[in-house]
Image 1: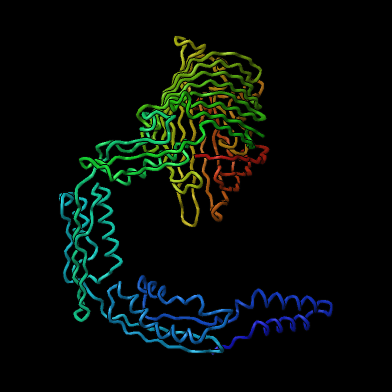
Image 2 (image 1 turned 60 degrees about the vertical axis):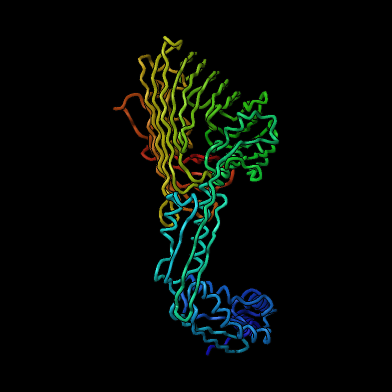
Length: 607
């Protein structure tokens, strides 16, 4: 039998050792160490005043019995056991164990309870022999009424988890009952209830008979939809958020999806969908949609920093209900050290599809980086379609005038640029996804016949894939590519349509857009083609932090046979926040005669 020294004794031992091993001036330190040991470690080393040990059971059965034998809160107070209460508790153990085993079909357990005391600490040992369980000897699970013709309900009844000769598991029985009734509700049988639900148990014979009958009642459908509380929005606009139509089979799941779509719109502070069961006509249930609109006009300032752009600030103004039609107006200004943008967009929602729209945009952009200086004013019209499941397709027409300086050459060009874009994104979470992918395909071009100063055709493709690996690791692969077909000299291509590489989202280790073909003076002037790839391995450190190792390669070039890939590799730190991840990377150039290090900092989603 082990004997434990008291916490005070441990403190005395430490103080004595300190006195013997240290010079006299350090005796006080030994005393302080004893006090620290007493208050911090003493409680951990002291024996628990009351423990319970359960033998003979495993799995869910054991967990249920352990829950039934939890000590009452007043049984132990200030490390002192109430002996009278403990005696009553021990006397009740066999009853508590037996009752906790019955839902799993065990009605004849043999239970032995022993109480032992050791140095003022008590141990209750409960040994259980479960014995033979009650088994199902008769089973009837049926659906009656109109729902009996529905395959989904009859399949659930036929595949009831309890079967003949199976141990009686009442938790599985209740779960299957609930699933059967929930399925009936989802199929529109709102009055579905169990007309018969019996379990007849013969403990002596160790047998159980299950008799279960679900009366489906009539099937209900969605009736008219009535909107209340959002008079400033037209009904046609609000109906876009509905995931059902009058005449569809009634489903609480559809009501939940509709509520989520209203919430995602960020236009309403409160959304309630209320079935009006009191006014059902011809099995059609009217739905009241009660909305509390949020303020439609919003002003959102922002500040930030990125290695590519330097310090930046932004201001966004939005009006989400122009002319009380549900149209949206956006005015935005971004001011950064190396780039400035100001513009507006007028967005007309599609009358049928929730995430489809037509947008009219006017934007002014100015960018001053080491490789070029560009000033650009753009007008654009875009028609976008939501293809569901994260897929979107859009066509657009851009008309822009760009004044730019690349190397020693100044130019001013007008472009009329029609294009089309397809994107697909699939991530379960944006804050810190574990798996997923995204890609974008785009084609655009201009010609003198359309009013452009130069003719060209471009194709762009980019993609990312994120894979979860064992050991809290994840692997992110990224690729960006571009291709230009044009007969004019490169100086007849606007700077914004040329390809450059380097920067936070390109080849780390190199400055923003510092990679590409050079002119005779050694200035980077951009290229016709782009190819960039990246691999990043990240190890999660808790729920918000991560450590990454990465390798980037790529460049811009004029001819496929002239490609020279730049390379960079390094380590990074990640911190994930609701407003976007913070990425801090230290990268080193590879393959350069005089390689250098570069720090990259970026904030925001990269999916």
